[in-house]
Image 1 (cartoon, helix red, strand yellow):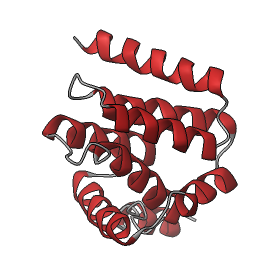
Image 2 (cartoon, helix red, strand yellow):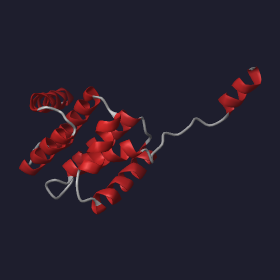
Image 3 (cartoon, helix red, strand yellow):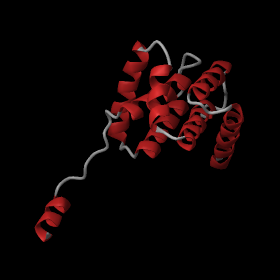
Image 4 (cartoon, rainbow, N blue to C red):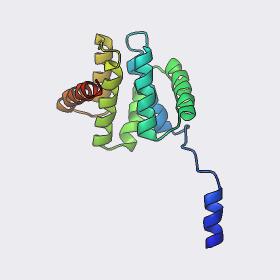
Length: 150
């Protein structure tokens, strides 16, 4: 027993799976909001990275790889259902609500919510089965989170 414990302590910690299809789907949806107005600002990209680090417990190198994969998937994608289906199949409502809050945080990161960003978040929330009241609550919570940051 002591031998197996020592082997486990000496072996490198397992790295989070950046090929996780749900993580890729979440990253693609974050990018969809960031690019909804045809450009993702540095602040929006920083918010996307922070969300991925916090939600999926990834290091910066893994987040960079995930964003690259999501950008490639986003460039080839023709719709949101592919991503939202993965998330609705794997996450409960509170987790999906949290994602909608995070989508709003990306949109708010540059202090200007474009109408296309709002439309994109609304569409994603509908596909995630987050009802309208929760959609509004997510927007309010993201604004509160933004205000707390300064």
